[in-house]
Length: 262
Image (cartoon, rainbow, N blue to C red; front, side):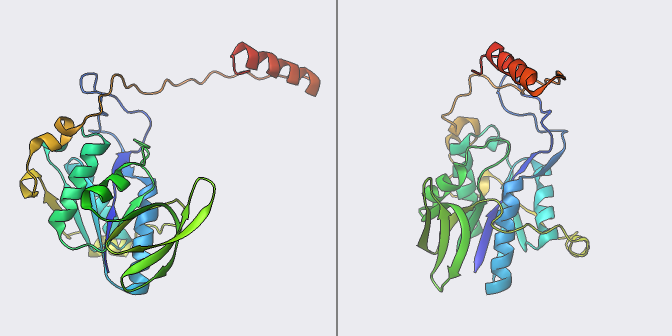
């Protein structure tokens, strides 16, 4: 089974500056990490490989330093990695991002299963995975809680619906977005770090894609127009109250009314 996991490098801190002109995050020079939700997708892929055999590949999109999360995936057991990196990809919204990654997947060749985390911590849209599946023309299931069975040409999964838990069978090739805690992610291995320190991270750019129309990528391919984006204000104000339970309850009620919460 050829399994591909989509991973992303996200800011490791909430103190991120915003470009006042483009409205996008300034990612250069800040601490970064692998998107926590992607760790569950990667663990799922590694366990499927251990049980059923195959190859685990990872793909990411971002500036050159995003190769660090691919190297981290190598330390956890991934076999191959591809980074989609091109200035023309910068500033992409979810539509342009999903199209770019789908083009990168096509350029990689045959894939049986694409796994994504539920969402990212810097965007929280949970849209890129399903949109990628639509661009690839393959079936997909979101909010997967567990993989119940793997067959020759399909797999059975349990998914978390708004009001029910449902079990569904999906044929390969397909895409799944997995919930957190589907498995407990493993830690990177120091032995694997040494063994994979020289392993290549393949870089693909627009010239490597089948569709080279620049209007489909980056800011040019993003119909979403952000009017304003800003970092959250840090508020450390606090009050300490003393008194009886009745007095504190009265103070709390007055404070909630003052803040117009009630």
